[in-house]
Image (cartoon, rainbow, N blue to C red):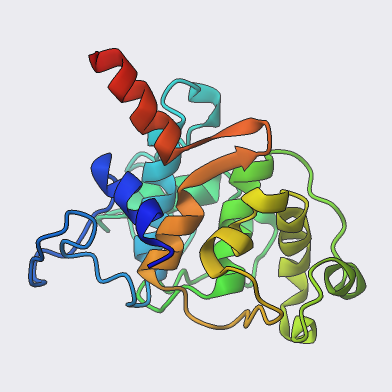
Length: 223
């Protein structure tokens, strides 16, 4: 219920790509959406680029450039003929997704069809909020700020993204998507509703844009 406004705003902008095989419901925000179902890494990558580019339509410098089909693939399981190659490869080229391009030579598979987990969402989304060098994240700094009881379970590479998210105050992805919690559960699959909540806003406090802002702009222009 608390996630519904975020889902509704994105749905009103036509930004939630859904599965036509599902049963339709009366509510536009719930139509084919399945908010409680885990979202795959493929689907979230698609949403991430699509929503970021739509909300930042007036700011080309903040948009993700999609890869062209002649680009050399960064992942063995996302070939050029994959339907989502332009998006996933584009995110890799931008340094948003870990790959050999970011110096992570052990990441040769994208694993598109497994569920996205919470620390993965933050690793991908936070760079598109902060858009600058991230703070040095340590286990101690995350424990001192967020106070997560399960902080030791967080992958070391994700700590700086989680710390940076805390510095975004009430606009943090964790607060918006997961609410108040003393447990991050970093390996827990992200639901489609939680993913929508995270993507509802891009940026930092005082320098960002939400789906609601874009809706308001459209409404003003149509008057």
